[in-house]
Image 1 (tube, rainbow, N blue to C red):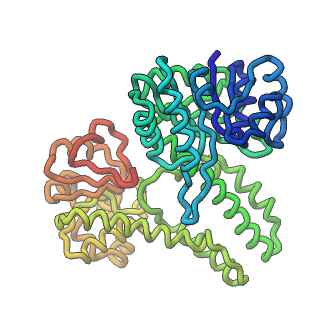
Image 2 (image 1 turned 90 degrees about the horizontal axis):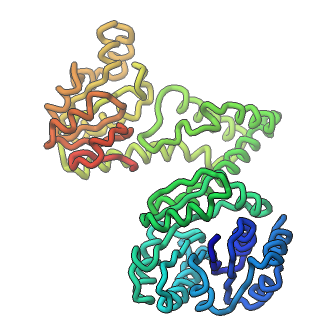
Image 3 (image 1 turned 135 degrees about the vertical axis):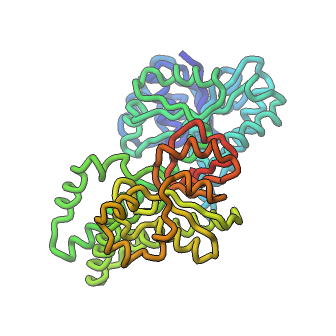
Length: 437
């Protein structure tokens, strides 16, 4: 079992002290608030939270919990320090790291007195890049070297108030962001008793995931409430609607559609979104989330066009023109909007779309093709390589198995991938660029 210090005895820190002791570790709490230190020193919680009093008392009676007002003792008597200090919003929205950096300064002073390896674990919610900032600050203050004398680990907490103890001891997963293999092994041992999946990621991934999680949770609440407002106006049971919504675990409550890439299109999503917004507007309801979705999609198409324009390349190819792979349906295709904008900027264009070629050959969709996109049909090529050979910039909107080999074969052609081909052999090539990753 490890000797652990916890800096910050508020909500996250108090739960951390109690739960780490529950896992069998010896835990020393530290805070600038002497009242909090006094309470932990007597085996008492510093917050009101379900189950925390019992396990705090249990750990204290077992001799695994103590507290101190000495940062030096907190560091020199332990091998791992958990940073659980507050990072509140500043007026402009950014997170205020002053409390965290003050604690880092104190830990750095403690490290000066240590000869053994020490791990500093960031549990507080922090912006991406904080791991590097903390590491540099510790080197400056302590005179020690990251990776040799100490390591900084990003280990975000996912605790719900009212369920924090249960969430700590039964997490959906444990995220460890570090490039230090020694620290990774030690942190895995800390969490081994939890039997949850431990995911090793880059520090910046660990730092941003808490923002992503909570922003999505806020989105879910708001989405549900906007649906509820519409249903209420239409005399529909909104709870029955959302219960039905949640039963679909293939699309609705799943990882489907959560892959960053290009904009949505087709007939269903745009049509039904417009229809739902009309229902809200016709009932004098403001639904800011629902009404902003289409705008966000348009902004994303513009984002791709801006990237194309930034290359300053005027010989452009596009692989994939329908709204998604596997169909000749091009209604509301984001790729078509992109193609038309590229032409409008005066660039030359070459296009390959397997399914539009098939539609022309089989004459299955000729009327729609000739009525809706006659201006694009002359740019269709018969093969993928024709497009690549005639272009200096190739935009990939659908996964095509021929493309990775062509990226290697044509090093002077720049490839902008909007869907991620998921081929590791190309991701480090200088002529390959991912969009949104």
